[in-house]
Length: 108
Image 1 (cartoon, rainbow, N blue to C red):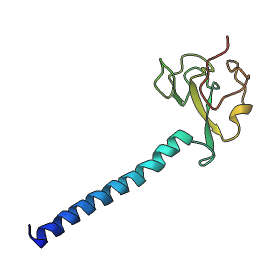
Image 2 (image 1 turned 90 degrees about the vertical axis):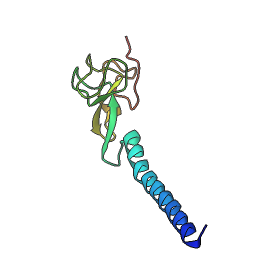
Image 3 (image 1 turned 135 degrees about the vertical axis):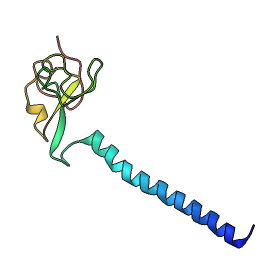
Image 4 (image 1 turned 60 degrees about the vertical axis):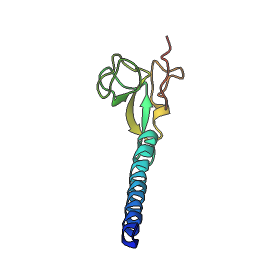
């Protein structure tokens, strides 16, 4: 193997490594933002406060996303609210009587 071909192999490997690192750095913040969605952008996910068909997205079986909630205040569906207001928002299905920061089983 000549010196020139070794140089190309090292360059190719370096480019692949750099590309992989760049992709990791680009994807990680997006994944964190999706799962956290809190005070960073001034909103939080609040479960159990959306009226039927008015949810922003869902977490439970039988629903897919925006506007798919089948009943008022479904515990598996969430709506975006200003950060810090979820647990102060009334919910007739929540065990605490207020919105929750995680999905819950509706009280009967």
